[in-house]
Image 1 (cartoon, one colour):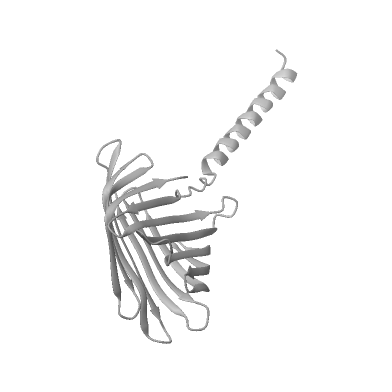
Image 2 (cartoon, rainbow, N blue to C red):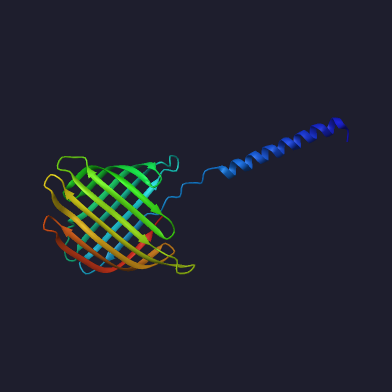
Length: 225
């Protein structure tokens, strides 16, 4: 093979190797895709009636600092066809720094819909989930609220995990300086694949006198997607 052919061939091979190296390097340093947590749907029939909760915390894949946080929660009493205990939280969110985001949206209860704003802190790993959300209404006669969830779910073996959750909220009417709504909830069970089930307890408190209603039963939670 003549030098006239060898030299261009060597240059071509060197250029190919350089381009390949740059491509591999770029692929290795490419940002990991957004891993959105699943939507969790939970139902618990018990001594009082049926309790239901849906929780979601999602980010846009094309704009990962923007997302949506929502909780839908209700309690129904056996033999009562009127649903009077329901709360829906919806917040568009933007990341401020690691683990903390600002949310603005609405809070809906049987008393009406109010615009609201919140700071949302989230910490998550395979064994722990912590969510804390202080919130305030952006309206006349505003309420302030503290909302929190702590889950502990250590691995039992390759297929099963222990599951536990403590969850609570406290809502206070600022103008009247009165308690309006609070609850404390506990869960204990096991998780296999996308299913979690076990026993649970809800302790609900209503109004300034903190009228108490409890629900003790078994729960099923499903991680949808």
